[in-house]
Length: 310
Image (cartoon, rainbow, N blue to C red; front, side, top):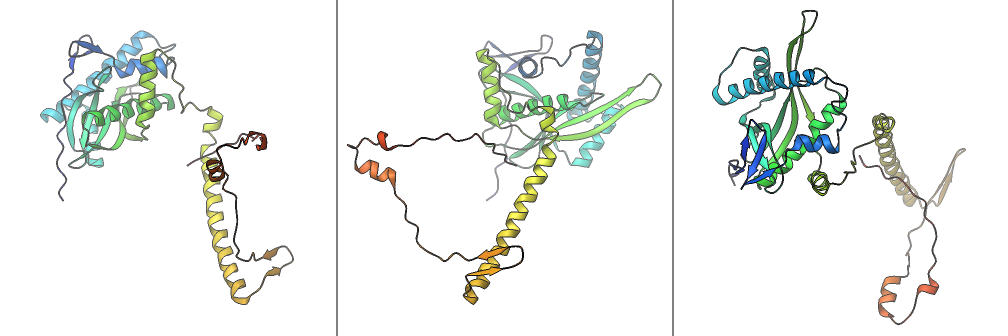
């Protein structure tokens, strides 16, 4: 059966570009960037002069407009950033669906997605243009939150649509003090944060509460992530191989009717099949509701433990 083509829905949100504000049915909605700065990245611009922040914002806005002009009107203004953007679209097979797509939860929040690309009849990828000179881990993490919230709102508005990939489109071509150019063109894919986590962040901000970020991990632990993953994967492979070896040995012992083997370093003992009997306490309790079991119950302390899933 052919998949029905999904056309993106309009949000009904009015955007005031001068004030950078969003209105829906007369109600002003909050933007995502400010919320992220309040909740997760309050120190983002500490120690940076305002003129540098404004200069970076102006440069970024210009690059956004140039790329949008190409996507909407096929106008190539000849800037290196647009040339690089066109090449990235070719390299990654990006099919432009729309730019500056307004998304909302329909009640409290609204924002604009830089780029929406069509992957198939019902699947889309979301891109966010960044013109940073240095893509620090903090900046990339902020972009991940931003795109994940966008994906959450996108799916709220377009119920049958699917999100394929989220990525940062990094474009930059600015002259340095020595006359050379800081030339950057790349796409950085980010892992999506689950929608329920995004919703909890948004709800916490609405309640005026501080969000407990589950991804806020001490740097020393984060630096051990690759080692932990490698150890777990090695352990899983070893256990799988050991299980296969044990199964083969057991089959041979059963075929030879041998109960144990000894070597210089280990003992192999075959456990015979049998029947295990256990007491169904819950069933007994249900059948005898008149009996007070509290005096028969034993309690013991259980040590805390850590579960790691990869």
